[in-house]
Image 1 (cartoon, rainbow, N blue to C red):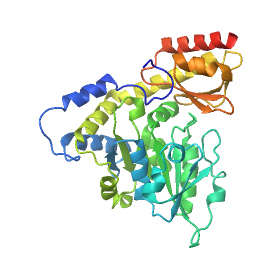
Image 2 (image 1 turned 90 degrees about the vertical axis):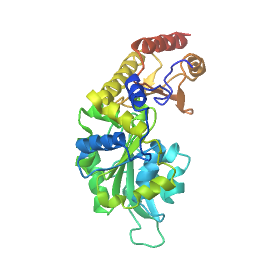
Image 3 (image 1 turned 180 degrees about the vertical axis):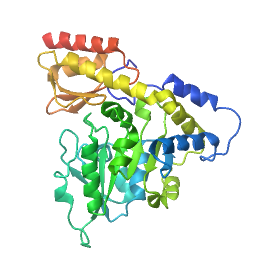
Image 4 (image 1 turned 60 degrees about the vertical axis):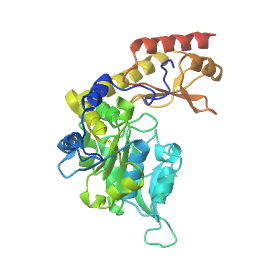
Amino acid sequence: MKKGFASDNNSGVHPAIFKAMEEVNHGHVIGYGNDSYTAKAIEIFREKFGEDTEVFFVFNGTGANVLGLSSITRSFHSIICAETAHIEEDECGAPEKFTGCKLLPTEPVNGKLTPESIQHHLKGFNFEHHSQPRVISVSQATEMGTVYTPAEIRALADLAHQHNMFLHIDGARIANAAVTLNMDFKSFTKDCGVDVLSFGGTKNGMMMGEAVLFFNQELTTETKYLRKQSMQLYSKMRFVGAQFQAYFKDDLWKETASHSNRMAKLLEAEVAKIPGIKITQPVEANGVFARVPQEIIEPLQEHFFFYIWNEKESEVRWMTSFDTTEREIYEFVELIKTLVSG
């Protein structure tokens, strides 16, 4: 399959991460995370987020979100999220199935929730006929390729805590956000009042395996049982631990995320020059959203596959990855120019 701009999930595994997995592929170690490689990876997370951070590794992003949300809710609770959120649009109802909670989708502004936009959901507290709002869940970076500032995160965390609620972050593209903000992870998550973080790596060069981070140990009394029950406890955990060790070594995560962000900015700059193409969202991570002539979409997809985001408005999404090259960007742009001039 020719490389395209459909998803950063479509890219392969970074060679350094693949090598790390090969290096631990010898001998026997105790399974289910009771090995030195997993222990070292957890140690690295605690160095970055604080010794009181609880770390649980899972298979994938949906599993991370489900485990994090399940640990802090009961079935009579509700979870506030953006209409575009992954937990609302792309997880096949898994959060509702496994938590039993009602999702309360809200119209975002450039992909983001604001305290004002969710006020209408902050009701029914202590009223037994109403699901009880318990979690505000946001994505960082958002599904629209935008990035919350620390102040925006802090405002949502403060609002949540004022109502005895929690703030959860879906960090599938947390590395891209960190590069954009030019900050360490802790500064715009734990330090801003975030309670639970799904920490992703698969979209940024890893093969599989995500981490669920809890910044309040009291929230994790049942998490290990929930992880097993939700089929997210990996037996050969050393291969997840080895990946995260490589991911953090010499800031590989920053190198890969910086590259994909830079490719997105290059793509934005070049397509913005083409008459008839309109960028619809601020490009702050590794996604470019654009409105294009309807008639060029199909022939363009034949050469560089990508997804239509809003068919009614002829809006498409182009995602860049750690292995996207400048040459591919320029080839794509030239093809757009050719098709537009038609």
